[in-house]
Image 1 (cartoon, helix red, strand yellow):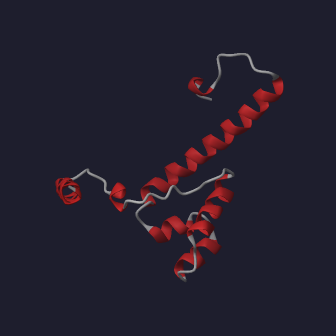
Image 2: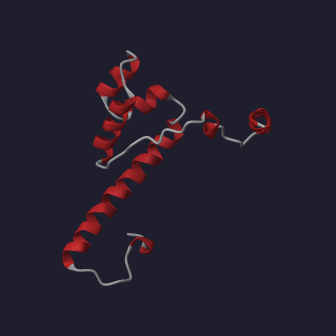
Image 3: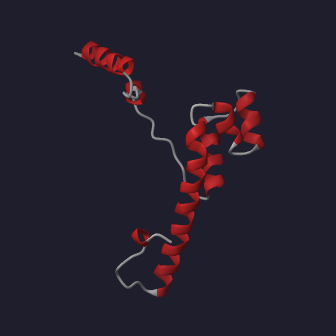
Length: 111
């Protein structure tokens, strides 16, 4: 286990057990994310990673946002919730010149 994930402070036995369980869950979630990251822009493969039912619901366009996050919570054994933002521009990645131009255009239109 990486040293950075351990506490330097002495903990009561019950707190250490809780901390250890959360550490195991967090590491499992990170492992799963490493699998998901390359397919994050491929919705079919992303839905398939959470099981057959979410994949079928996605394919039939009956998967709701709430159901998708409930599936993710079950799969990760963690509480996963979306953060809904009132401005869609927040999703613009600025990692290419065309993205930068788009971001600048959006900002200019706001003024």
